[in-house]
Amino acid sequence: MVMHLKEGSDTSKELSDINVTPFIDVMLVLLIIFMVAAPLATVDIKVDLPASTATPQPRPEQPIVLTLKANHQLYLGNELVSNDEQLANELIKQTKGNKETTIFFQADKSVNYEDLINVMNDLRKTGYLKIGLVGLEALGNK
Image (cartoon, rainbow, N blue to C red):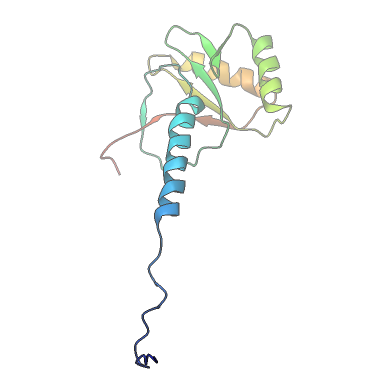
């Protein structure tokens, strides 16, 4: 017996659809990684920041944050800094001696201007001239 197939019909065509299952799997794994890593990259000191209307600048991967609280306690990252010498030593340790590193300085809005300037002078005495002031973005003032 001989079978004759039609020459025009090709039932063994390749599928041209994209298989998105591996893409979805990768995206879910990345989502879980970022959900776990995001809380670890933040500073946990609460301050009442003043609002700013300036355009936000991109944040570096490992920012060095100096915080002046309303009760005049000074924190570098999450660590309490008690005097100028300890501040200088901790800054050198965290920046690995690179004086070109930007120090992000945030202060409670109830802190008076003189205290703010005194801390900035301490930063300048240690050789850190790149100081980024941190504030909240004002809503509706653009």
